[in-house]
Amino acid sequence: MNSFSITLLKGDGIGPEIINQAVRVLNRAAEKYNFKLNFTEAPIGGEAIDKTGVPLPEETVKVCKSSDAVLLGAVGGYKWDNLPGGKRPEAGLLGIRASLGLYANLRPAIVFEPLKSASPLKPEIIGDSLDIMVVRELTGGIYFGKRGRTVQDGVNAAFDTEMYTEKEVERIARKAFEIARARRGKVTSVDKANVLESSRLWREIVTKVSKDYPDITIEHMYVDNAAMQLIRNPRQFDVILTSNMFGDILSDEASMISGSIGMLASASLSDSGPGLYEPIHGSAPDIAGQNIANPLATILSAAMMLRFSLGIPHVADEIERVVKDTLKTARTPDIWAEGYRKVTTDEMGELIASAI
Ligand code: IPM
Ligand code: MG
Image 1 (cartoon, rainbow, N blue to C red):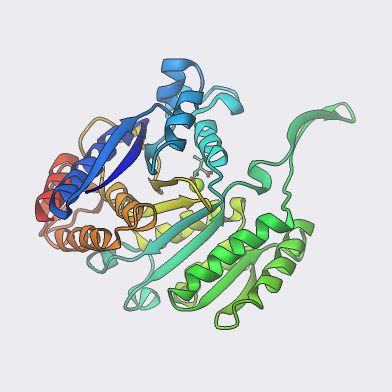
Image 2: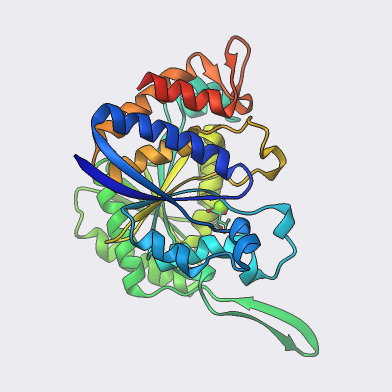
């Protein structure tokens, strides 16, 4: 029997509640499809700060590195909002991305058919379906560049640096082209090459890499225009390839278009070693502990984990099918509408698990 070790980083806010439901679903899938999962928990973010004084204990990195995949809930909360940058819960997330070399962040923005009316865009703009994949570079750029405080002409100043090497751009570009190949065959590379030198290098390298993928359509777009086009005509996009910072912003925008932020999963991958899977939404401290959070993004992240890290895509397909099916009758409060059964976080997890 295939056996896999999974590290659970439950984190803060609604993190533990939603991870628990994903575990429930995974255990049921393992039973039905005859594989074994060994879960180990490790602290990250605010939880880790409270327990150990740092947002990413070395032990957590070690446990993650020795597992087949990592499933993460969310980090952050009011309690830790006033800590200095490097000591905040978010530093734990950035740290684990860097430690595991997770340079490729895949963020699908999908409109689930039964949730079409939840999109803030007009139905004619959404059309029959919407399926965009944001491929965000995750371990470089301004998030990890040189930063600091200084004094200039007697006034305080601060700086962060956007820098990319050819290598960093090339590997994320290749990922995007390969992903596009299994989809609709189009990559839109988003940059700010009319202003930024780092973007000009980005565009050069993406153009060079694109020659190796003659079957894929490549298009370059400035980030301001991309932000507008996502609202004006989102269906023109298949794969959006972009930098860490632009990807952070555009993936939130793309997820809102789908109207289902509580539904969207993500995968962060390296070339070898475990991938990390997490819902794209945050820790939602305002609703933590109330058993009302939507666990579906985490459950769908677990499905991505089965597909990309554990090599059992048919089980991922089954979980995704059950999620879509369940939405036809039952919903958590965030996506609830007249005529549907309103369910708690636990009940949603139980519904999905028992339908597998
Ligand atoms: C995300 C989040 C993180 C990011 C924060 C929490 C550090 O916004 O995953 O998009 O900016 O990458
Ligand atoms: Mg973000």
